[in-house]
Amino acid sequence: MLRMKNVYKSYNGDGYALENINLHISPGEFVFLVGASGAGKSTFIKLIFREISADSGEIFVNGVAKSISDLSAKEVPSLRRLLGIVFQDYRLLPDRTVFENVAFAMRVTEAPKDIISHRVRHVLDLVGLSHKSDSFPNELSGGEQQRVAIARAVVNDPKLIIADEPTGNLDPETAWDIMEIFRQINEHGATVIMATHDENIVNNLNKRVITIENGHIVRDRNRGFYGE
Amino acid sequence: MGNKADSIIYFFNETMRSMWRNGVMTVASVTTAVVSVLILGIFLLLFANSHNIARYLEDSVQITVYMQDDARDDQINIIGSEIAALPGVVKVDTVDKEKAMERFKERLGSNAGILSALDDNPLPYSFDVHVDGPERVTEIIPKIQGMSYVESARYGKDVVEKLFQFTRVLRYGGIAIIILMGMGTLFIIINTIRLTVYARRREIEIMRYVGATDSFIRWPFLLEGIFIGVFGAVISALALTILYSSVIDKIRLALAFIPVLPTWPLMIWIWVALIFVGGIIGVAGSYISLSRFLRV
Ligand SMILES: Nc1ncnc2c1ncn2[C@@H]1O[C@H](COP(=O)(O)OP(=O)(O)OP(=O)(O)O)[C@@H](O)[C@H]1O
Ligand SMILES: [Mg+2]
Image (tube, rainbow over the protein chains, first blue to last red):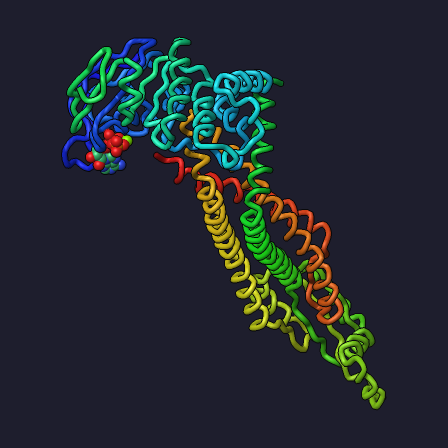
């Protein structure tokens, strides 16, 4: 699903944010990316959806023929349609309803209207927000907003979901609700890569854990725990 | 039908929604477009009229030939046809003594009363000789002066040449000013639309995260640009039409000797030109302000 080979990334030339990263993630895996603040987790996530480009090395995503770094600006949209991206700060459009926020991701693919509305209702059901379909983001709690963002990420049925600290702004209980949704999505076959600080979540889910320190992968455990 | 039609409806809705939501910005953009296109339109009208005046002046290059007072009518007629036969002469109008007097009275207007003191008509017999271009004048005048019974052949040389210089300046200056105005309008619209784009940068960012192509993002903005440009152009064309017809009415009354172009069909061209320019400038403005933004 995802393969990185000798990937280097520096921001201003002064040292690497990621240095010689090599890894392979198979379809259907659930992977936590952990590490201290500034370790390079967000950099890793951003490389996958080509928010930034690697200095050298290769990054392959299933379904894309070229290395992500070799994609031209014109090819980036089709990469992003293969991915579902979830951020810590939800990134919803404040002036659109829940339904519109989710439908948005399908409109850009120029999907037909009836398919869009059918599919949007389905994913809102999946995240348990059917009844809030006409609400605006500022009428929702943080957890509900994050569920809308997840619905938006999965509406195009991507095979790879990447999330950068999706529970970072939520209280522990709400965080667990969100994790439960990710777990379900993963069980339906999508690969999930999630950067997180949440020790509790990592230790309880018993999934693959990749630990980054100072831009290096220092541990990669299949049924891992936070910090060991 | 199907996907494309859905997308087009979507773009249209997006445009309307954006213009409505950014109401103040929309009003500001349209106002800018109105003002710029209005100024452009005023220059177009000035240009069209100065061009018209220049043509009129060129057409009306004429030499006035005064005959000697003792020339007989038949001799005068012969000279008239000799002049008409000269190469470059388009038309010869005969102005006999009565006609000269009429013209003189006309020119005096309400002061014509003073002429009743005259018991004889002192005005000479003359010809108005129209030639096919100002360059001809210098070669034709000596030929006419060489004819018998001709008192003098005159041509308001300095005045006409100055007028020609003036109309030339108007023509080329007009074109330059119109181009400058067009560029100024474009610049203002680019900046206004850039503010709209900036206000929606977050939305654009999110569109890109979910895989929108640049052209998908661009469309609603381009439509918005066309709307702003065309709508602004319609308003200013309307204002210009009303303004122009009232101004030329006044000119016709007060300065009748200036050959102004009538409102129609001139205004049809102005409408077409302004709407076209408005639309183009709107699209170009959107495109340019967006492409700076979309560049990663
Ligand atoms: N845009 C940028 N310009 C310059 N340096 C950057 C930029 N983004 C990140 N860095 C640097 O790269 C390194 C890795 O940053 P990154 O954001 O990937 O860390 P992180 O693991 O996500 O941290 P956190 O847990 O705080 O989110 C840090 O040293 C950071 O200062
Ligand atoms: Mg981070």
